[in-house]
Length: 225
Image 1 (cartoon, rainbow, N blue to C red):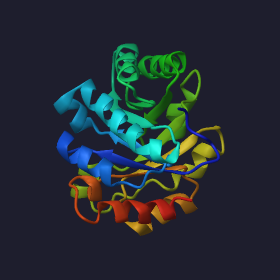
Image 2 (tube, rainbow, N blue to C red; image 1 turned 60 degrees about the vertical axis):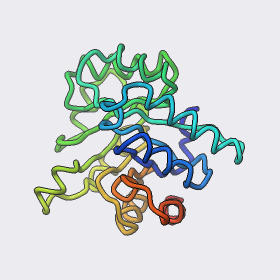
Image 3 (cartoon, rainbow, N blue to C red; image 1 turned 30 degrees about the vertical axis):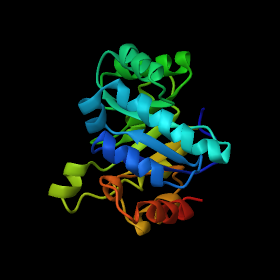
Image 4 (cartoon, rainbow, N blue to C red; image 1 turned 180 degrees about the horizontal axis):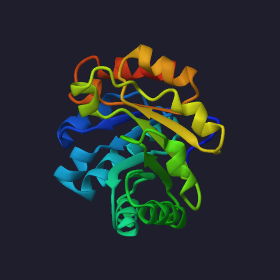
């Protein structure tokens, strides 16, 4: 499955354990507008099997709604682009994520390989002040530009803003989807959508499962419209 440019999505990043991830997925609304992210800590802990298991369970849930599962693998690729993309695709990923901080050769090869194997390319612009400058260096744009305030940035630098201001700058020059990460409140989700994002990434409220997990996901999904 590839992303629909006319649709807005909620991306839920799962970063804890496989047990928590499975419990959370079972509680989510069966909506094809929810992207499941195999977070970096999950992949580092469990390997490619994490992607495979998340995809299988999410597809089983979406069968109830005649939808197709979409799983993004947050590889944070910095080198060996083709190898990492192929591993993710073989495990069932619908998209893979590369760091915009990687060498331009790596980012170009990452985008090309994603296209060759039929998955979406996502470039994470965390710690890049001017994403448009990075995009200008590439042979072709990715499918998704991820504008990202990192977890440590938010924790240790309270003045660091979520890069909403970069959305229109990127969209003015490139026909890409914009994903926003770094905010987890309803207000922050609303601001991301208001400013033109197509994908909003959340994780804090989905690190551990609770009796409110499914309801919270449904509330977030209402705002992503």
